[in-house]
Image (cartoon, rainbow, N blue to C red; front, side):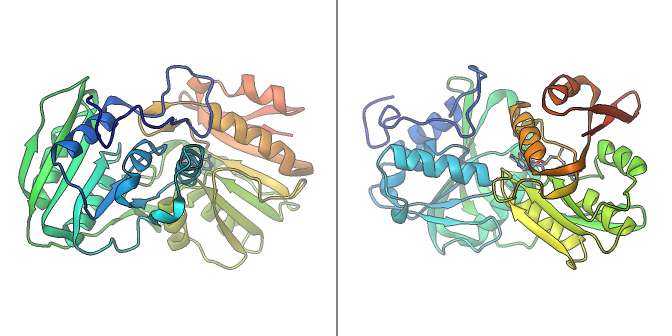
Length: 364
Ligand SMILES: C[S@@+](CC[C@H](N)C(=O)[O-])C[C@H]1O[C@@H](n2cnc3c(N)ncnc32)[C@H](O)[C@@H]1O
């Protein structure tokens, strides 16, 4: 790329959380291509918003335009703040919002990495169709290997003009112009499971049905008398907590998830009595020896990346926060082979139940 306002060599961007996997990077060609396309618009001043900037590459390089940044993950927020700080860029110049807040009015440009969840993409274009100026433009990029025709049909739902750039370093940018007349869409899915209705915002894990691993876990979940304080780690829409609440209505339940939309969804699905919600990617706010029981269907990928390092780090945190005599129960796909990691952390690891796809472990 030529040396211009958004020169990609201007800032050093690192990942949070750190990874030992050298092949995982803090940005991709799809991010670089967005800057290249933005530069070709030759705008000096513009009212801009940025979506799905995982580690802060776009935020840092477009900082001079004082963009509004939509944050959906606590880990994303930490990564962006870390990179702004290490590059001596001021946070106070920027406006940070959650995915459920109204966007600023009359936006000129939206810069967007197409997320893995195309429902979330749809929700974001819907929100933009309300807030963009009539002449506003959306630049949305993706790596070509993740292309699906649905990306175009969603774009066509909200914009008259949908142009595709040429492929560059195996990525593409969509240029969306002339927003269509506002239409209303629901941004919530409803899932029926065991006579209850679960609601979840677009973009939250397992949109079409309750995850099969979680269903298997719920079949075998048996609370014991001493299970007074329970943590649902990586809680998603809260379905595991709901199973706890149905078995033991008086116990104290904590839900923790890295995703803002997941935590907000779980608030729709649980009776709030004795329930605490934590939008967090780490257990640092919990004291040592705090929980009788921790249950989890732990994460093993983020967007298109598969990575169990986050889960293994959380297992160490669980160990610290479990009471003496407390236990950790988790469900996982067999192929992840979590046992090799769990036995290094816990004194005892047993298999509670298994089928051809999933295993439930109990750790002390
Ligand atoms: C496999 S899903 C399970 C969701 C839910 N418990 C269920 O059974 O449907 C894993 C969840 O982990 C969350 N997650 C990813 N990284 C996390 C982290 N560092 N801390 C907490 N939650 C995290 C994701 O947002 C996702 O909701």
